[in-house]
Amino acid sequence: MSPRLGGSARPPVAAGCDRKPPGPVAHLSLARPDDWHVHLRDGAILAAVLPDTARRFARAIVMPNLDPPVRTVAEALAYRARILAALPAHARFEPLMTLYLTEATPVAEIARAHASGVIHAVKYYPAGATTNAAFGVRDLTRCYPVLAAMERHDLPLLLHGEVTDPAVDVFDREAVFLERHLAPLLRAFPGLRIVLEHITTRAAAQFVSEGPDTLAATITAHHVLLDRNALFEGGLRPHHYCRPLLKRADHRAALIAAATGGSPKFFLGTDSAPHLRHAKESDCGCAGIYTAHAALELYAEVFEQARALDRLEAFASINGADFYGLPRNEDRITLVREPWRVPPTIPAGRGVLVPLRAGEAIAWRLAG
Ligand code: NCD
Ligand code: ZN
Image (cartoon, rainbow, N blue to C red; front, side):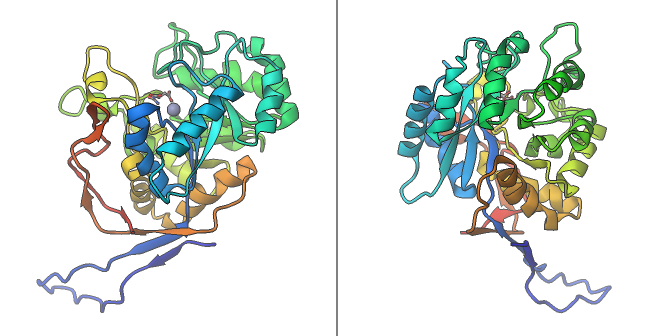
């Protein structure tokens, strides 16, 4: 099951030789990965983005923040059916459904979710923190009976880990969440599996590393590729705007160390979050970066730069499955080190998406 790094056998080039032969074509074979946090949306956008995710990943944890959100088992089953219907012919992809936690979620819904066999987690959004979070939770302690039921049924809780307190600087909201909400949560529910989603800070990486085995975290490609300078590179860059926000370079370095460090507590979750161009390029633009078009390839760049390509498979294909208690994927995929240019836009419904790296090159491409 270990990744196989290969290259075409070419004789070494003598130093001083001015004729540059084509470099060796490295390839990387790994167990098919899963995406443990993705936004697939619905309708025409779902149809446009789903092939990108299904081509790379065997499974994905599908976020429930539709408008209105997916709050019941019945709604999750209906959404799952729409996803399966939108899959390209012959695609083998399993959507892992989630419920959107509200202060009105009935305790009995948790037993139903567990019994459904297709709902794998419940998602906490602090009210107003991000896209379609208006139905989110204001006071998490009001959900404690539901969390107790999740603990009993071993249904993981996924956290958008930011406070919404306007007195807290927007770049500090994740760090404050750790002490204000996550620490008490871990004390109150020692048996509840918790994923701190899309972590962005050194504090969060450290908190998860030092936390109990019930606590893990997902890391996005954009948070290991970019720091907050990318929001202002040559002007205001709405396509680099996501929640939680990109942070300083030292936080990015801590996330790279966590992702490539070999700990089973960290795994791939793209948080690919498509919004049509007009909704991003607006006086009040939506948060979310579209990365599903090149998700694994983008991570490969980061792991290569960190000289940790041999650890990509554990991060992308093993740690998440183990944490969720799901079987590891048996088929394999291959990445080839061959640059390709990302299209400037991707058609979606009546508009276009502007993907990450639009019009620019990515070093790795997916074979086949
Ligand atoms: C997500 C979205 O657009 O649904 N946006 C984002 O910036 N990540 C919501 C979320 O995951 O916070
Ligand atoms: Zn998300």
